[in-house]
Image (cartoon, rainbow, N blue to C red):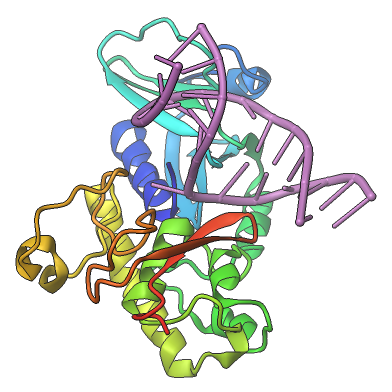
Length: 268
DNA sequence: ATGATATGATGAG
DNA sequence: TCATCCTATCATC
């Protein structure tokens, strides 16, 4: 399930597999069928990502705008294209590869202008090398909203989801309940500067690892540990378990309809 | 088999 | 704040 690192990885993957080629486009059972027919056989000219939004560009036809939401996923395959099983919203296929998109919140054909509008609605993306965190700081520094909610607000900052939120606040020792306007500039800069390489590493490994080498169970002389979502993390979904750094029980609560996790001692 | 759960976002009230 | 979209996975029966 997707945060920004997943989307940027997909943009690179779609480009690597289909870029510069004429691609078979279909929407076997979905409401995208009409648009897919218009794209079928065109060249995939480029891909792009901002935050959790993915864009696939087709020659002379504009962009396919994809948002995975909570459930969306892409299934990759090689060789002969199998019959679609269940709901496939968008299938791209060449002679030797195919990609099936299932369950996205959004999959629509848009114009270049509409792509710019989507991007303009989003805050800076730590995975876009040319962007800075300044616009996000402007929103955060004047806000009475909690920093936990602000980091999840895609208009403020794009690409960060529940895992990166919890983990970056832990790594920076910041209490998630603090108001945005209580943050010092240096604290925000530390969050932004930490997110960039952290999320870049997420793109590379296709998972979220946030535990520093000095805090791994091996380094701390503790038994090995496996997080149930496939990455090594400090607090995400570790409620009731001891903090990897200080041993205090990790806490959780519902915060704006999402699960929030933090260490009350390290993030006091 | 069934139910709970999830890394997201929107629109109504 | 709540319901809703709608899919895969895992735990429990």
